[in-house]
Length: 150
Image 1: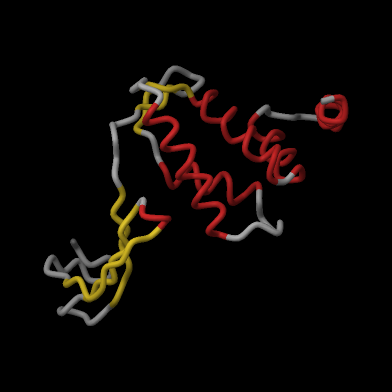
Image 2: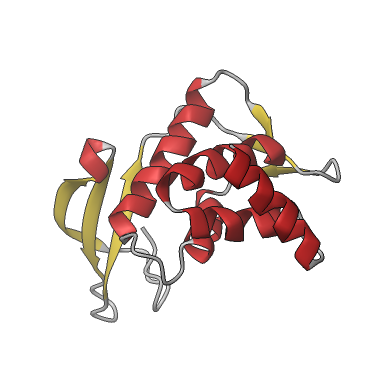
């Protein structure tokens, strides 16, 4: 593993332990070249996933992008980082086990909406406003009307 600080290629594992309820291994590493310490995570990847964007482009599935979008929706909400990791893990596992190698960004967005609706309604509305491209206050009103009716 290359050191993210100096680029040294001979980092050493100092400690390994299970993480994310056994779904990953957390490794503490040290770089003998610069002395820096950092953490890496090793996860099982069942299959390579490709995301088909709304404009037709195909890009590799990016777990960190998914996590970032969920964190943005949950910013300043009472949800801890472990919970966010479990959400991301759950969505990724679901995508990997559903059998399709190519998935649409819409499918991913709908999965996130499902989870956020149950978890935190403010985050749900925030995510929906970006995901569904709200442009005016009336878009929010219509969405909130559906939320109250459902």
